[in-house]
Length: 189
Image 1: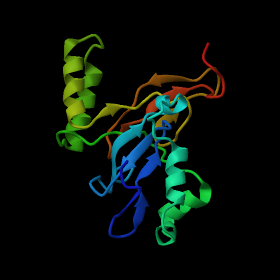
Image 2 (image 1 turned 90 degrees about the vertical axis):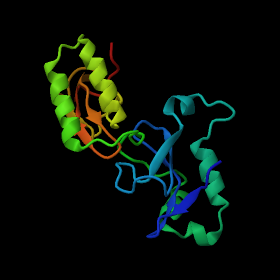
Image 3 (image 1 turned 180 degrees about the vertical axis):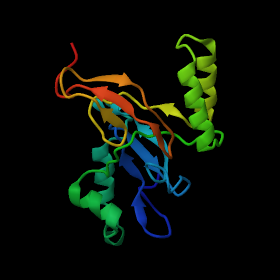
Image 4 (image 1 turned 135 degrees about the vertical axis):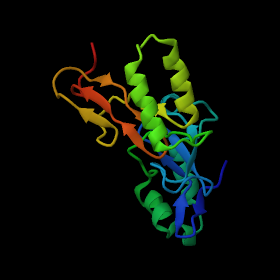
């Protein structure tokens, strides 16, 4: 098990948070402070696994229980104190995206997305371009079946929930929001 908290120099933060998909994410001082999920470094427990945990799955309840056992001085910190007081981990409105293996400038990513728009969807170049952009940290926004303003544009409230157009993001920025329509409370047929 990793550390439960870490010091950023400007405050103590909980090392574990929940992303927009419901997955548990690990943060540490090695992460990027300006990321959409500040200091996020890796996924600990995917939401799918948390829905049906294995004996070794790290759950939110286990982490909160461990934080309750921390020394009082640590529990007084704003981030840790909030977890202890609420009995749940901090939640973020963005899905976790790992840091890039290669740094790419925003202008390069935007140019790649524009090029992708001009290519036929069945073009062999599309996959090559996606692979290149992925190395720069760009990923398709996961299809989350609820509206989240920071990653979605909603075109209609009627009908069943569906993604009309996929969005793209890095750990640092949402480049294109996913376009969605429908009511997330109505199941798809």
